[in-house]
Image 1 (cartoon, rainbow, N blue to C red):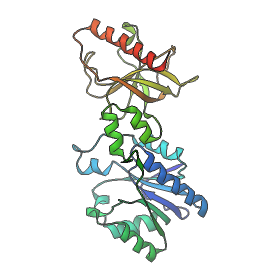
Image 2: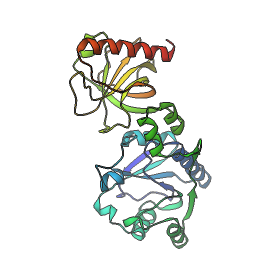
Image 3: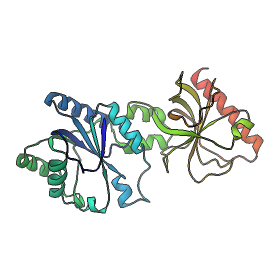
Length: 307
């Protein structure tokens, strides 16, 4: 998949296009992407996605914006896995937000991305003050020569598949439900960095993974599966949070104790899949209480995996 920042380079050929934030790339997104790639194959054109960075809600109301399900890198990897050929990442700023709906159509959809066929969700709005809608797009398509298709929402167990529904499931610790809404276990990527080696002191060495999520959508202790290492995937127990009992951190840290693994993996880029939540993160009165609870967490995780 080719990735472009902005619209400085006009698409080489007409495109089959969809537009959205695609946070988490859940079942609803994947159904839309399936239709996108099928249409692109039928027309012999590249399947293209226009997405935004930062999320528009982060731009307009950063303090009230929801936790991100996926970083930009994670999102792009998921889009590539679903067969997208071209990804255009639009820097969402004041100038872009001020574009009228007509300017967006003429300058972006027609001028830069050369949309031949456009597929959007049934609730898609665009342009300054969200003035643009499907009716306006269809009229513009008749004028500029592109077809517009609406994609109905996807429901799962009576609920609309959405990023909000995934966030709620993760926040409540219902990881199995989140996995069903996503079509895969929820995961976070990150690079292994040096830590304070506390895990080794208490007999449970951990890989400290630097993540780019400022506010991860879940926190606590989990049974996980880790990918990205030779011979993997590996199973383990993980803590995601701010370490209230071991030197409180200001940024979230992901610590993973891998079972049956002992190698130097500093600098490795890992994918951690969250399969089951054991408990919330908590503060312990002393070092011995922390050590005892970690031992219980590890044993509970092994029981979950039937090890």
